[in-house]
Amino acid sequence: MNNPMRVILSLAMMASLAACSKKVKEEAPTPTPEPTKVETPVAVDDGKFDASDLDSDSCLRQRVVYFDFDRAEIRAEAQAVLACHGKYLTDRPSAAMTLEGHADERGSREYNLGLGERRGNAVSSALQANGGQAAQLNVVSYGEERPTCSDSNDECWGKNRRVEIVYTAK
Image (cartoon, rainbow, N blue to C red; front, side):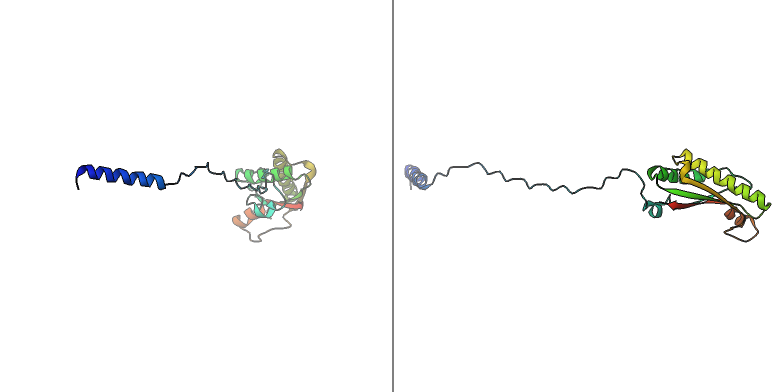
């Protein structure tokens, strides 16, 4: 075929195709509605202790404060524990505790009762400095009467020089 003939056939095909095609009106896409968000209530942690924390919080589970020989001063390592218990007392005004002071077997009965009381009062003062109220605290001294260890050596005596924190109301 010659060139002009090709041009004519191409034009005829294009014309026939144009006549057969449908014109479709384009519509804007229908916006799909966004699914409604269901907000689940989230427990708000207000940073306050509750009664269950006494058994679950590692700081509050520590309830023994140890003392050096013939001393009633709080050791540095006990400060953080007493701060936790003080905050608990602040967060829970209905909470109450008994501070049980103890001493080792050395010294007279009267001396050890007095030393146990001084130790209990030292812990009470530290708790009050950390937010506890005096009405929440009760100090009792057992002196040497309730040892946790009965051997007569430095390690055992160190375990007996203590104040035990006992919650009487949570």
